[in-house]
Image 1 (cartoon, one colour):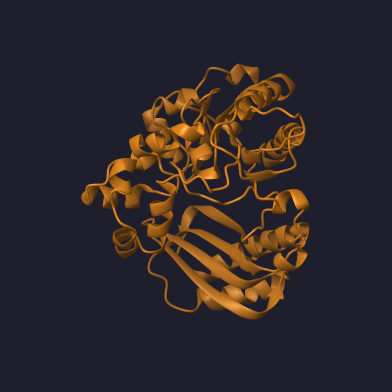
Image 2: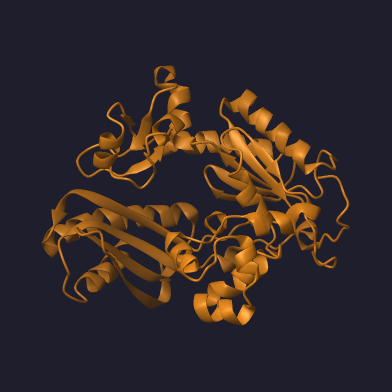
Length: 369
């Protein structure tokens, strides 16, 4: 580890099977049973699965039809985002008792920088333990945590002792931890990239570390530089409490495939209305409109258009989406349509960073973790 790098104390907290756990908490009859959130109906897709269901191979993004084949006793429950948001806010209030440097990634996970914290506790591991205990006692759910010197390692570590556990990777353990890590565990290495790495003899962090920056750039493009540095424990991204939203979207999966643009326009009208509501709620607008099309054979296509001005009005979004729909002939019947707005005007509204955020924390490797 280069001694001149900023060393931080980062915690990644990840709620355990969040949507499913909320359903089981609210309905005690579901505790200990295999449940899937969403996925009901002939074309439903699962949003989350309880650990009891995961034992059968049921997982998120799987069709409900396949899930029920894997687990005949599977119980489907409806999604309830209002309830998930309510619980998420309770969990975040606990986080803010320890630090203002909280970066939510979603409703069920967040990074916390506790290098300097409100409790004056020098041990990030003990803080994580205390936070997890409070979540269980005050909210009624379990959470897992990863603790280390940067966001990348903390996120990888949080998956190690799930559910209801935590793992600390101390500064002096970082390099060995990364060398021993299965390449599939590297955050940012998806299934396709992992297969490509396997073909090139890269199975562990040690294998990845043996490759030069030039080699990784040549074979993995822009991601090559990222892989080169993270396997060496170098990931200087700070915890950003005012995380900027890059896009805002809504989509719908249909019970029957659509083959007529006329029927699609009716669906797109509702989707555009939902996107406009979300833009207004977030007080943002965007320049780039993207139409997402998933065909009946599950192939995915996107079509985008960037406007010369920011928009949030439904009528403009819908008109632009119509142009994209008729831009070229559809390849097949359609099972899903989505609309997203990116190139958002969030930079203009971004709060100025506080003195604490600006401060670069540089400390020795030997400190309580």
